[in-house]
Image 1 (cartoon, rainbow, N blue to C red):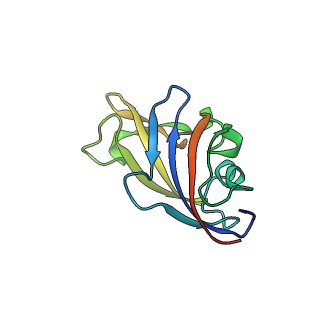
Image 2: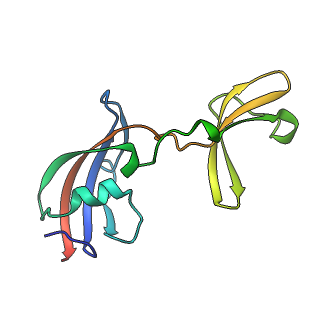
Length: 139
């Protein structure tokens, strides 16, 4: 049975509430993780607790246990001269800050400025995962 510290192999499909799939491992090898190392979002790890080899289930994860709430303060208007010349709406940039590296989405481009969003693309969203435990390597 899976518990904190268990090494597991699991296939998953992550969906939004409207059913749109945002990520899946079904077309590749299952992910292999040790619970408690912080490599997965909290809600995903919590959903695996208590499962065994071959178990399947669907879990719903609230934003607080996934990528957090959407924060308006993470939207910023920046002069285009400080950005790469070839930016387009929807483009993702990598940036560094005191908190580490982050992904920034170009939301809007104006004449001299661009609106940037540093929220995780899944922030504020309830996530639904179909889990399929392939193997509990150690428990």
